[in-house]
Length: 281
Ligand code: PAF
Image 1: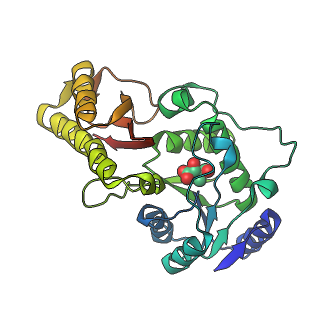
Image 2: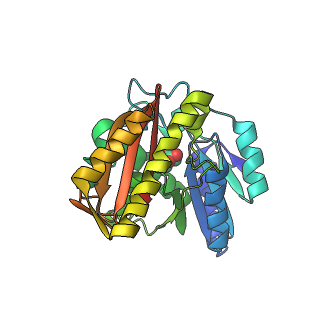
């Protein structure tokens, strides 16, 4: 597996691979890799990638001033080992300095309804940072496809829109959420949780499961009442609810009745740690 820090070296590796007719997959990550990330590499393999480039970059521009940029877990040696074992053929560890010029001033912004709600409403500037760094990675690697996790449901919808609207010619593949046996969705931020907070966090997946079962049993659920019950269940478990929303899975517009095919998205704090989870019911 090749290792790059310099974006231009990554670009020239990808160019050579492209010219040799190799199918390139990109797996963008912020590192602290877990089985959820490795499932993205596995999805790239299944889709027939000849080269799989994993980027590991804690992107400063997608963190708010009071968020966890400084303490976000970083372990390049462990990440490189896991990527090599999973079958990645290149890993990219850029630095903030070689990704952003000191006078960087051009941004990629989803300027419609996709980023105005959910995490976008609570984390101003977050998706501007995500879109900008993903656009830069797409330009460097020019992959045939890029794999993202469904765990970041809103991010996947926005990146898909960005790829379409800016004609990147990159197919966006979304891989399912990987969960612990307990139901907890894997996340690098789970490392912040105490044992007690981790137990509380199980209410997220349990609530989603219940809503899914409700729709399967009844066909549809009036969302106002279902939402109130879901939020109360999360609060009872000791979580501080940030949002509980039901949306059209394609365009993220809120729905009044939860039906099969809609997405439910949750965000809640376990102590100081903000966790998100979702499912398509
Ligand atoms: O999902 C993430 O880990 C990040 O938002 C991403 C896509 C790697 C961009 O920094």
